Image (cartoon, rainbow, N blue to C red; front, side, top):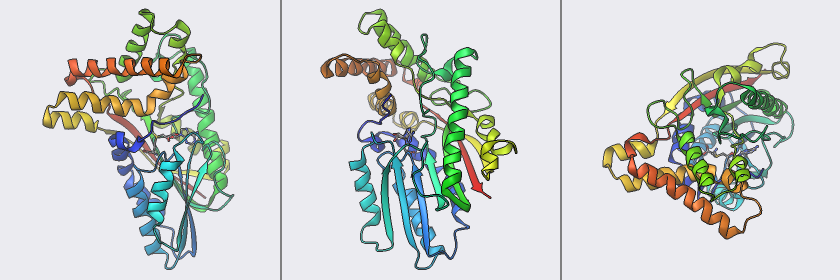
Length: 350
Ligand SMILES: C[S@@+](CC[C@H](N)C(=O)[O-])C[C@H]1O[C@@H](n2cnc3c(N)ncnc32)[C@H](O)[C@@H]1O
């Protein structure tokens, strides 16, 4: 299944920027030990167009330069080949602008694979990306997102895939990191109260509403039953325990590969579109903004379900789908939001 973000990703994702900024203190802690080196390699996994992380990377590079007099820095910005690398190229050249001691390389490769040579990485960062599984365990026949579903056989399948994937991601990083190197990974997750992206347990559950509208379109005959089932998010929002397990169990492959958990914490980041609405009471702006931010990461899941249709048909259906979502927000703005549940990990290699 092709995973890609809509173009203009960073313009439509104010919340993702707040999430990664909230991990800033862990980033400072992780790069602090990089001192008196002549060459430093840094990496970002799942960077999209680089717009949301541009400020963070400027700070990281400036700090590394300050701590390492005359250092040459290489920053590797990676994402899937389907990513908008033209837009990322613009961010990368903006960061380099005339700096003779900085090279930004773009690597169109999954974080399930290596993106830099073994034992060469000083610091790696990833934000709001590693909830994307390497493959979809199965298409759900009764919902579009597994985290909404009760514990059972299907959830167990997604959990198993998610554990396998997390192990694969970490083993790849264990190879890349130098001894003493660190990564900070800030992830969509599930907290101890069961909250996750778009489910703050106060407002309507965003994933339930998306599903309800998709199901209704099937009931009305606008999409076929197999298209309804075709839209299952290739996602899983892990819990802290699920993130931590293989980093803490001495017999795990990840632990044996030398990775250790430095810090872990989970926080709620309020939906910036809802906060703005509370201030200005501009319902239309809120309905459009919230829809756009959700569309930026969800559209490809619904598009992928609409195989064997003309481009025009696909566009008409997804336009109608999101127009219905906008209408729902417009009718009831006080019950919509997309708060983020985010777990931050600082991991180091012994
Ligand atoms: C929501 S965006 C986050 C972008 C940016 N890191 C941020 O925090 O704003 C998720 C990104 O993860 C990327 N992604 C998903 N699966 C990936 C994989 N297996 N390897 C690399 N990137 C992946 C997507 O292509 C997308 O650009």
